[in-house]
Amino acid sequence: MKKIIVPLILIVLSATLTYFITDWSVSSVAEKAGAYRADLLETQIEFLRNNSVLRPITDLQGRPDLQKYLTEVNVLADWFFKNPAKQLWDKHPEANDPESIIKGYRLAAEEEGSAKRKAKGNLPIREECYELTRSIYDELKSGTYKALASDFQGSVRFDLHHVKLEGNKLKWVFVTWGGIGDLVYDGWVMRLFNAVDPEAVARYQKELESYKKKGKPPPPDLADPATLSDGESRSASKSPSLPIFDGSDYVPDFLPGVQINYFVSPSCMPDAERVEMKFRLKARAMSGQDQEMEFTFMLKADPSWKGSWDGVRSVEAAASY
Image (spheres, rainbow, N blue to C red):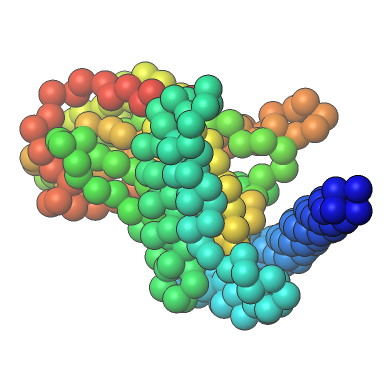
């Protein structure tokens, strides 16, 4: 009988000990994860308390001062990574991995189960979101963040980060900072301008001067040749090409409250000298009132942006999860 009882007692003790160790381990992991999430949130809040200084940066004439703004962005990012983010990773070194979130998505796409197909189908989109986020994250962390143009309205700063020709279409990558309430994107309008004809300008100025001498207002159809576009295109879809996301959705210590995305447009026509790009947004406040914004950038048409152009509208189909 003793030969039977002793092994049974050992089995029970072993099972009990295993239970308590497992329970303690699970509780410990849960507590550690909870502490990390709380500290990460505090880190993000600390940045949000300070990033409002980025909004109203202008020159002495009240115009957007791009270089001064970019300097401020890089200084603020340097402070964030060397202070709040550093404190976070000093406390949670095991979580300090810029790829941790995308690794989780990759793992979910490989795991067996009913959710595998959906996770695998979404993975290419998530990979693109991550790659775009990571490229800008690396700029911010190294103090080399750049933008082609930037402007602000109300609580929102809109950066046109870069433009790239891909498959005879232009990819307009942008970064938006801030916003009271959710940001809703409302598409774009592109206008292309060729070289202005000097004779047309001279005729316009002569007619304008004639009306001034007569003390009469110029007719509505008398337009400055410099304002007449030679081609126009607009988005058929209001949404950007990727689902709306914050950089911190893909890299844990990405500066919070910052969205990254892109629109796709036709290329610039071969003889275009200037391109005007207008982006429309809305910031939805909790009161339900929308703050409507338009960010308009007049840019020199870079040779690398030019391709065959027939004015066909480009459709941006935002992917959904």
